[in-house]
Amino acid sequence: MALLSFLGATQEVTGSCYLIETRDGSRVLLECGMHQGHREEEEDNARPFPFDPGSLDAVVISHAHIDHSGLLPRLAAAGYRGPIFATEATCELMELMLLDSAHIQENDAEWENKWRARLGKPPVEPLYTTADAEKALSLCRPQPYGSALEVAPGVIVTFHEAGHILGSSIVEMELHDHHLTRRLVFSGDLGNTCTPLMRDPTPLSRADVVLMESTYGDRDHRCGEDTLNELVEILQTAHRGGGNVLIPAFAVGRTQDLLFYLGRFYQEGRLPQQAVFLDSPMAIKANAIYTRFSEHFDPVDRAQLQARGVKRVEDWLPILRCTPTPEESMAINRIRSGAIIIAGSGMCTGGRIVHHFKHNLWRAECHLVFPGFQARGTLGRRIVDGADSVKVLHQRIAVRARVHTLGGFSAHAGQSQLLDWVRHFDHRPELYLVHGELEKMQVLQQVLHDRLNWTANIPERGEQIAI
Image (cartoon, rainbow, N blue to C red; front, side, top):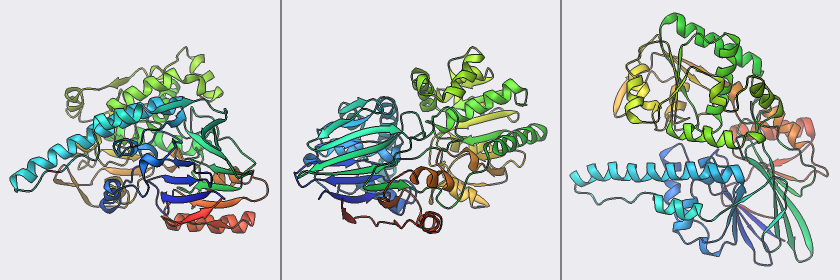
């Protein structure tokens, strides 16, 4: 029988990584994600891989987010030379995200080495370099949805729509081993069916083993229209109070959702602000990729855009101003009121949003809107949990802005949507919960038992099972 090793995203949200080994000798890595959050978790990124990268036959990636693909440059630097399989849009987005990640690694190492030199400490090396990222990207082999491909001897992979971000996929893996066929299905990150632009996740019915994400396994998201009305009220309150609105957003996925909704508010006459700034070079580039793959959009949302004569989501919002350069970004901070500022990073762990915190977070008339999940250990999570002050760019800043969380904007499936997706499987495959904090997994585990009479397993890192 084939073996599956759980090497990441076990009882945690990030660091996705699973190794599949057949008795015939094929070795396929499913995901190669970066750990994000607490410093201890991020230190895992620099540790040696628990396998020989050069021995792998193939790597399969579900989507481009860094917690699923962010260690591919390290893998290439450590000797991996085989193919990396992902959907076409994922390959394009990975080019954008991995090169940006490499730039961050290099800059962080350069900054740290300046103060280490003053202290007489030896220099550190970046986690990986731009050259490492380019090496990994040269190995990418884009694939269409729904087409079966033998990625290694006896291992056949099919990508299905996951509805999370552009190019995101559910990975179906057939393992042919000593005349025995077994089927593994990895949900990847399942999309929220209320998310705009993306199609709904594909329901599958056949599997022997299912790995299912559980990021929001403990709750459902609010109704989409309720969340939109809440956002409109926040924007109107901020406009009346004379403050700016800050929105930390992931450059890929969440930003495009926000632009679609803000464009809808504008078209409906419900957007009081006169300027929306997209202050994220990566998000600006991601918009162009979304436009190139607009045929993958949900047909209803695509028709809504076409009815207004627009193809690009950003054209739906005429007051949008993109600020790719540092000078344009800094100029935003001269605006004291009336602006919506969308900037990365989504969990406030870096990027331009922290510079806008320096100028706005301490102002009571400003509003801070979190439209997505904030992992433990991140600056965003500390603010959501009610910190009175936080350290930003080496300065202690008071949190006086009004803080809002909009769970309905999540690009992840909520509890009921997870149940709806998994109930399509026949013959009750073995079910393993991944990509979630332990207490959320335990809630979902109990709900699966109570509602579906289905026993779900919660694996530990390093655990190995037979498929």
